[in-house]
Length: 304
Ligand SMILES: Nc1ncnc2c1ncn2[C@@H]1O[C@H](COP(=O)(O)OP(=O)(O)OP(=O)(O)O)[C@@H](O)[C@H]1O
Ligand SMILES: [Mg+2]
Image (cartoon, rainbow, N blue to C red):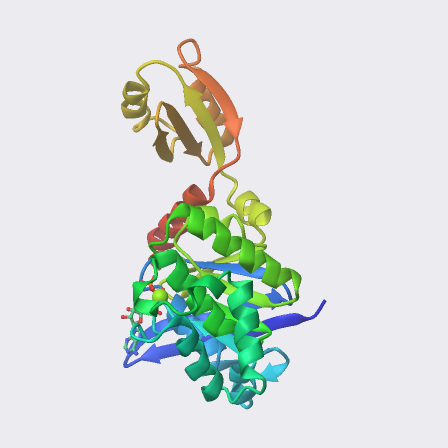
């Protein structure tokens, strides 16, 4: 399997602020890579560098076999980019938006191609509605249709489901998986953990520095955190008590259940065992949210 994206040590400054620091990223063809990180970390900036819209200050690499620096127009041609904010024409119909874009791409057999993407996105019935009148979920599908019109091999999707309801997000992700199965490579930024879990691999960027990459099990395993699910009466009292105890790092309440995460295996367990007469303890896998909080905390403690 070849790599659709392979970049090394990309850097980008705006003025004297360094926004992206030595970004190295590899994504295999046909895989979905989730791009995560706090607001302002440089995800959009990185995406724009990968599709040739922004020139890195330094670094090397290739996308779709084309050199990122010398041959970025070729990358642009074969990449579909969905911007963070809806950028289509609200006063045009769904179909007219796609017709206009097809002209910009100088597509041959445009009408046939438009019919195909409308069908693929389930938009055929809505093709004569004004884009501005679509609900959030359908707007995002139109934006994806627009990104797919010229049959790209790489999709760069910048928070494509922000503010979209869970059902519409689920359907959107079903489409993304279908596209990946057809061999399209997808880099998708998101702040949703359930979406991160749907990816083949993740990249976690924090203030310009990539703190973790790889598949989810390996990212979780590398942090060596242990999580316990705790159930019982008056869980809020236990939560307050545990805060200052040894081996306890993160406490997350999920209704009547408390998730306790620590990074000192035996110490964490010992602390919890002291309460096992009143509470039921079960060892569970550490969630991605705790993993990312942990990465961020470690980075900030090191003066990142
Ligand atoms: N053209 C620009 N000129 C100057 N600064 C910029 C420019 N574009 C982005 N920035 C700054 O670079 C930093 C990173 O921005 P970027 O949009 O890449 O982050 P992000 O990770 O996509 O954030 P979010 O999750 O909020 O979308 C921010 O501080 C932003 O203000
Ligand atoms: Mg962004």
